[in-house]
Image 1 (cartoon, one colour):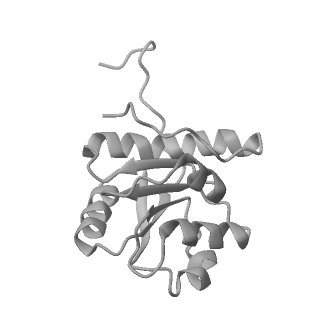
Image 2 (tube, one colour):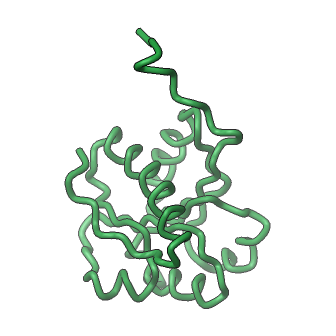
Image 3 (cartoon, rainbow, N blue to C red):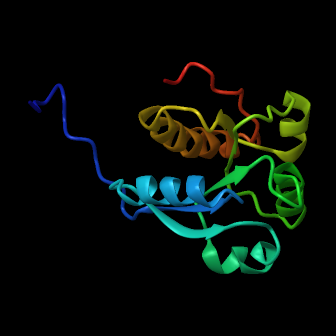
Length: 153
């Protein structure tokens, strides 16, 4: 029931574009399907590596990047450093199954959030939204680093 005390949430003007960079096709496909079924997100591309991503990133214009920490040939953290080095300040949610990077490694890249791939879907969705919202707030303060979100279910 929606009353004046509980108004309907406003829909975003446009769907927020998510770029997924992960070399595990099953995870990437499942994440794409899950994200594409949300009313406020759309996946603009899925890339298995950074090979041609650096050239395509401007055309893709994502609002958020989900990057695997342990990409096959290159670390997702290295990719993040390259993106930041090119002046791309798009919020990054790093994900991993086993590798948990140190806070110093993540801060060096200018990440926005980190999550284990074992996170429950509803928690992952909340984290996507929170990453975008928090990074926007922090960008206004010229600070892109956030603490690792552990409390989300």
